[in-house]
Structures are given as C-alpha cells and as structure tokens.
Image (cartoon, rainbow, N blue to C red):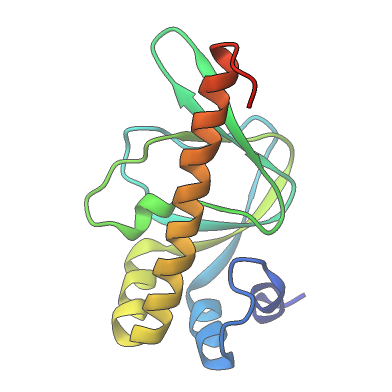
Length: 151
C-alpha cells in the first residue's frame, strides 16, 4: 500500500482533500518499532507526529518510582501531538506494545505544510486538539481507577 493510500484510509487523515493527502505523503515516512521499544521519551522535545498503521503503543506517565499506562493506541490512532508546538516537551512516554508500524511526519515539515496551506493547518489543529482532549480524558479515567473510583 502506498503512503497516499495509507493516509487516505487512516482515521486521523480521513476526509482530507487529495492535495492535502499528497502534501502529507510527501513528508511522511514509514517507521517500525520493535516490541517494548521506547518511541518517545517524556520531557524531551518531540520531533515528529506519528500515525499508527499496524500494531499498538502504550502512552505512559513516568515518574522516578513508577510507570503507569494511561492509554493503549492502535491502528488509526496518533501520538506525538506536542511536535506540533514550538519548543514543547512531551508529556508522556510512548512505548511499542508489539511490533508496530507508523507513519512519521517530521514536525518542521508538517508545520511548514500547515503554514503554506491554512485549510490543512486548520484540519490538523482541530484533529490534534481532539487527540489532546482524549488523552486528558484517558489520564483522568486512569487516575480515578487508581483512587478506587468507578468511572
């Protein structure tokens, strides 16, 4: 399957116009991660936005004494939204739960594409904000569970 076809069918980019898909395909690369491989390290600047194609990853909250899985992501999901912000550190660690294939969108190229095509920028921003809201909700649910509160 070509990058164009993967992007056309991915949940995050579904519904974008042909020109927008072509723009994203021109800056996308396929990246694979082995089971248990750390993809993003918390408190480091993310340099890419990832679309999960196959496999799954765990979004984890890390402290000096423990790691908590906040959310599991699979095909159709995305991570690395902090790469869309200038000079913003990641808030979560992301680890492959199994062999996983993603599309990697370099943050600088993605931001430039969004600047060049404001409609693409608007779509990416709105969709990324929905991802952020989902991540906040997942974190809230996980903490409630840890406190013994039924959600």
